[in-house]
Image (tube, rainbow, N blue to C red; front, side, top):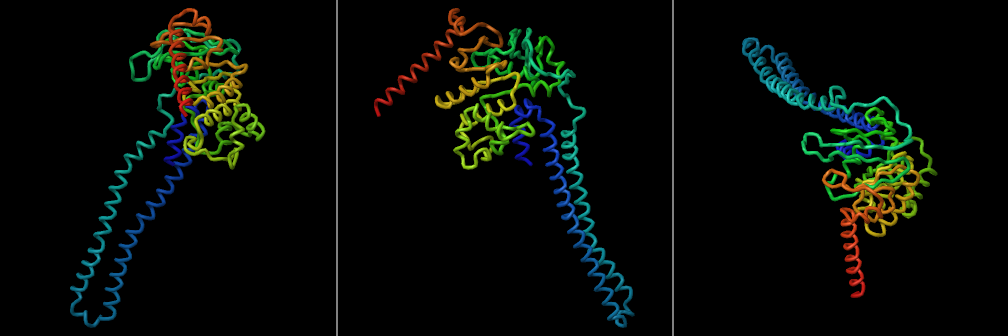
Length: 399
């Protein structure tokens, strides 16, 4: 059960974005009930053994005394009082451990009750500060996603991570967020699916505040592919089709092909039924990313969020994943968070963030022409790529 709990917590973003919380809750609840039942039965058996031993001992002593008196009745007639006293003392002596054992069990139950109350309170679904859910069912984006003067600080922190962000993501367009670490890029990606609510300002979809939408319907319409791809300790088939019911084999294969994943899957001994291990440890980073993209393709999301999906990959893997991402982004409204500027050059709009504020907006060419912060970032990355290429060529010549 502990492994299942840890796996669920590790994949909490995936569970939320697929609106699969209820199914996971039922799964964990079933495991907890099974464990409670097993523990109760074990404790019951354990608790019965000691009293049974004590009772057996008492019965044995009484039996010996009774049969002894019957056998030696004549000899004991003159010493009746002594016999009764001896019997009383023996029984009392045998009862004392039994009474002590019961007292010990009472102490164990008393100490366990505190932990039981804490666990029960944790599992309760009422009386908890839930994110308020809207009633409007989200169906499809028809105009745009808009952030209007959005500010945000994480719970129990006063410092604002985002400060007055205003930007628009039109339907069918790709908008990229770039900037240094800590600029607030990933925070925006967390606000759109309502993993958090804004501290100030408003996020709207087609002019309607996202707080008015039913959270589950909103998240089901979104696909997220992040740098830290989470896979369940299950088969490739399970991970691609996660959160969906009655998915056909042909649909899974088609999604894998479009994600450039089917070729390597076919080479595995068990194909789609290959176990990926804990968090996908049996697969490379690029393979995990392509599985995640196949999962997103199969869900066919209306809105796509890519959070530095290629930043941790080598050149070959990045090329394959980038091709899969381009396939995924076709005719979709896409929000891209990128560290490598080379991956967002073709974006319809690039928004440059710094210290939680929008400092520049435009296409790749427009931002280079401004010769501002984006141009400096681009020059720095280009210089690094050129340096790495020179070093690689020099090493190749030496060998």
